Amino acid sequence: MFMSLIRKRRSIRRFLDKPVEKEKLDLLVEAGLRAPSSRGVNPWHFVVVTDREMLNRLSQSKEHGSAFLKHAAAGIVVCADATKSDVWVEDASIATTVIHLAAASLDLGSCWIQIRERMHAPGACGVLWYALPVAADFARSRQTAANGDRISR
Ligand SMILES: Cc1cc2nc3c(=O)[nH]c(=O)nc-3n(C[C@H](O)[C@H](O)[C@H](O)COP(=O)(O)O)c2cc1C
Image (cartoon, rainbow, N blue to C red):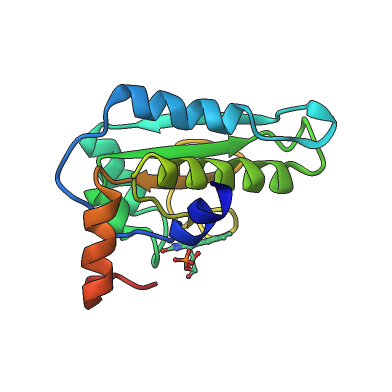
C-alpha cells in the first residue's frame, strides 16, 4: 500500500558493506525514467555509479552533506539539461523523489545529496546533479539509525 511506503521512507546515510543487485539498480533507473516531467520532455540522465574511486570522488563534491556517499554501494547521479526545459529543477527533483521512494520499496536505504548551487569541486555532469547513495539493507540501516547512529547533516 502506498501509504505504508510513505510512512516507511526516510533518509538513510549509513550503509551496510554489501553490494546492491544490478536488477535493483535497473529498477531504480526505470523508476526515474517513468517519473512525470513537464511537457513529457524528460530532460534528464541517470548515471549509476558503483566504482568505488568514483563514489569517493563524488562524495567530496561539497563541503557538508555528501561524505556518506563514499560508503554507499552505489550512487545514482541525476543530471538535467537546462537547455531542454525551463523547469528542469522541478523535473529532476520529482525524478529523484520517485527513485528515493522506489529504493525504500526495494528495502534499499537512500538519501538525497543536493549538488546544484552547492558544488565546490567538479562533478560528473555539467548542468545539475543530485546523487542518491543506496544501501543494501534498508531494515538494518533503519535499525542503526533508530539506535542513534544516524549521521545528520
Ligand atoms: C532537495 C533536498 C536536498 C537534500 N540534500 C541533502 C544533502 O545534500 N545531504 C543530506 O545528507 N541530506 C539531504 N537531504 C535530505 C534531508 O536532509 C531529509 O529529507 C530531511 O532531513 C528529512 O528527513 P527524512 O528524509 O528522513 O524524513 C535533502 C533532501 C531534499 C528534499
